[in-house]
Image (cartoon, rainbow, N blue to C red; front, side, top):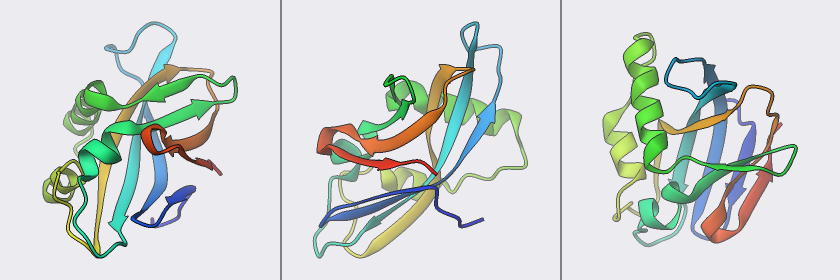
Length: 140
């Protein structure tokens, strides 16, 4: 449950990708599928961080062909869609909102189904990152 398949870290944050949940949906373009990312974000600094603007909104994944996929606002819709159709998964809305806040407290950790991505069905995701901060890690 708490396995980490990719981790990003700098002086301020530690972002861990626990898993991708793959699901097919009629809203996806032909030949595409959706991924929902289970992510924990930890503010390891001694100051409050604008987590949404500085990190969360820039979470990006890359496939083996070098294509990049950003979650952004569309990703929020994908996460919502997934949660609506898969009642067994629970979302911690307080943690989710905190991960997008502009006032993420020092020494705080939150975990949530945070980002949704639409990718080609044959894409192999190999990298996870925060593009704005040029932080990248290989996906195991």
